[in-house]
Amino acid sequence: MGDLHVHSLLVTGANRGIGLELVRQFLGMPSPPAWVFAACRDPKGQRAQELQNLASKHPNLVIIPLEVTDPASIKAAAARVGEHLRGSGLNLLINNAGTAKASSLDAETLENMTQIYTTNTVGPLLLGQAFLPLLKKAAQGIPGSALNCSKAAIINMSSSAGSIEEVFLWNYGQVVSYRCSKAALNMLTKCQSLRYREHGILCAALHPGWVQTDMGGSGSQKPPVRVDESVRGMLKVLSSLSEKDTGTFLDWEGKVVPW
Ligand code: NDP
View (cartoon, rainbow, N blue to C red):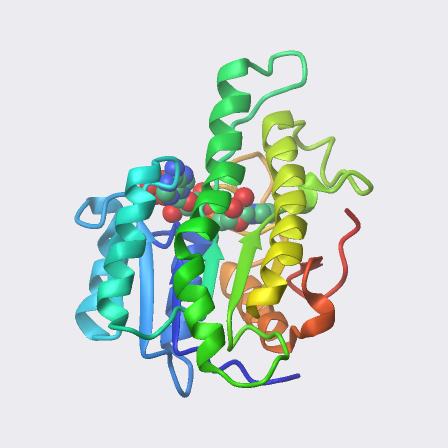
């Protein structure tokens, strides 16, 4: 396993669940990043209380307003991050924000399909585009051609629910709009890896496990994986990613997930 020495990163959907725990664990590293940008929809609201408490203790944590379905909000977030970084690049973009709606195939709607796709798939596309100049700058700042997450990377939080071969937890919930959005996110990840390799940016999709968060625990069963375990596992995976892993789909334990 390599080391993860990230100078700066941005996590979307950082006010709760996996996003908040990613922020916590990055801040708790022996040599924490100089900048942790925690993006959420309503930085001053009640739902961002835990993030606000963390920011009062960690001067390297900056809360950034971001609605991932709004292109203007994405552009404004990239501009704000750029101002803070003052000429240096962003090493790591974690597209974590996501949404799901309980639905069966029979009851799925145009509205659901569109809303979930816009959040889970179009959001990460637009974020990748908006942050590309900062990611490129980070890659240029680190000599050597090898790809890794300490240099420059886009990590898309996907799900085994989007795996066509595995069709994770079908009997637990059909959630067709969610499955389709994550299958499409996987394709986006592959496309980003092909396009951004020349800029020195690694791109990968991760499945965090079935995790005890608002989303993971919204059904009748308790998910098996604690959020701290999932994130610890994913950070270990991030630290191990190299050239050969760009354009792949891995789970929180580092195992390859079939497309
Ligand atoms: P949660 O529902 O607990 O948190 C979702 C986060 O995404 C919240 O911070 C939420 O913000 C944010 N978000 C949702 N929509 C938007 C939007 N339009 N703009 C900005 N932020 C938004 O989910 P998890 O922490 O469990 O999931 C995180 C990621 O992991 C998701 O992409 C999910 O699909 C994926 N995943 C989770 C699994 C699990 O078992 N938990 C399994 C597989 C994948 P707000 O508070 O404002 O709503």
